[in-house]
Amino acid sequence: MASSKPAVFLGNLYLQIILPFELIYKIFIRRCDTINEYVLLAIYVFVIFFFLFSFCYWEYTNFYLRYIYYFLIIIGILLTIYRIMFTPNLAFGELSNLTNRSETFIWIIVFIIIDTSIILSKIKKKNCFSLAFPFKNGQFLVIDGGDGKKSYFSNYHYYGWKRENIKNYYSMRFATDIIKLNKYGFAKSKILSSSNEDYNIYGERVYSPVEGEVVEVILNEDDNIPYGKLPNKSGNQITIKNGNYYISLYHFKKDTIVVNLGQKLKVGDYLGQVGNSGYSSRPHFHIQVVYSEDNNYWLGKGIPIIFNNRYPVKNCLINA
Image (cartoon, rainbow, N blue to C red; front, side, top):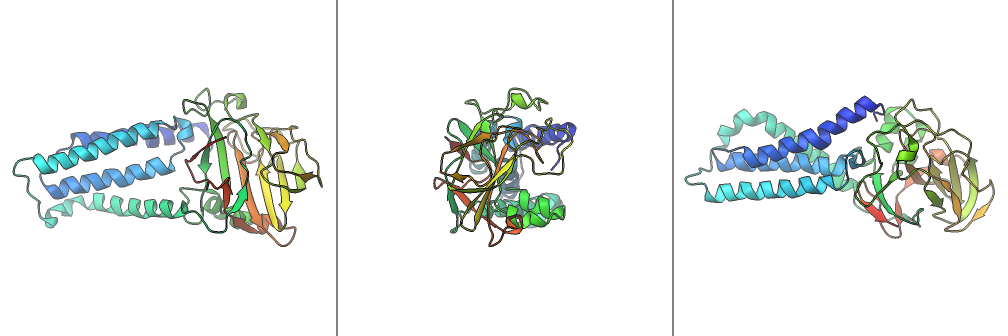
């Protein structure tokens, strides 16, 4: 994933501002000569917007902005249906007349495939490992979650790590990243801030989501400057062993972890504070569960999780 400020800014400017406005403009303004063309336009707009609605990291603008776009797109599609029904002498049109729209057909097919993968990645699994939510107060947003093997666009961890030839990608299949929103849907007080303190989740108190024994602790790694150069390490972390399941929590703030190696934990025990250490471009919290029958749990099998029976998929809100 791109982590430099210019790449993040330009990418999200296009995906969350320019492209949605382009789709809204097309569905409201464009007039077609046949019913076929109107139907093609509506499908084109819908499949692309579904991708944006599901995939985008709305923390970079505002989480509720996507619902404003959603409302406008629905109104636009209803307007298209109205035009089809009430435009005088509007012909159905011959399919052969759509041959000059081959590019539109290609984009529709591409986004239908992507959208289908996103939907499949969000289907709740049967073998989920139940966890308590690790935060106590506020509104939290899952920014990566679900089955990463089904869709990179729901959860980048699996294919992102596999592409980099990092051996533990299989354990990252259901890894979940979480941030905190304020009541207005913003994740931070300044756009692409270089100060960790401007991010709502930074310094948030973390509580044990499971009972078990602490088998790994790293606590003295420095926090990164947001969108700066990333170190090739996991950062401050806690791993808790529960049977053959290893629950790993990453990106703690430096020197805030209060538990020790070998300590027995109960659900709700205080662990530390969220930071921005390790391979982290901005403050967020990473959690994953791995099944392993030996101590090499980082090469184990990634297990889907639920928080109080809630399956944490990308862009879902969790209130604590």
